[in-house]
Image 1 (cartoon, rainbow, N blue to C red):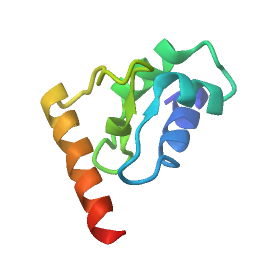
Image 2: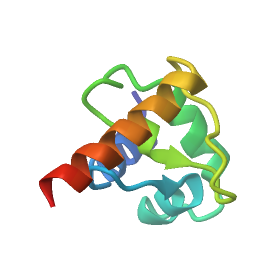
Image 3: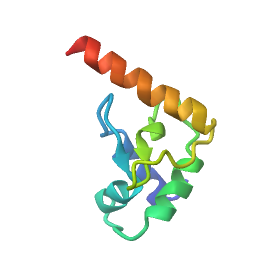
Image 4: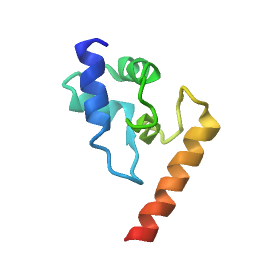
Length: 89
C-alpha cells in the first residue's frame, strides 16, 4: 500500500459507528482536498474491509458510491450500523 492509501484507511477508522462521511471529507482529512477520486480508488483496494469500515464513505450527494463487496451490502451495513447505534444510545 502507498502512504496515501494508508492515510486514507486511517482516516476512515475515525468515522464513528452509524455515521457516514463523504469521499471529499476523507480527502480533506488526509490533506488532499481535491483527491476524492483517489480516495475512492484507495478504498476500493482496502484489504481489510471487514475491519476498516470503508462502507461508511459515500458520495457528497449522499449516494452510496462503490463498494468492493457490492453496493447492496454497503447499504445493508450502513443501515445495520444505524440500528445498532440507536439501540446502544
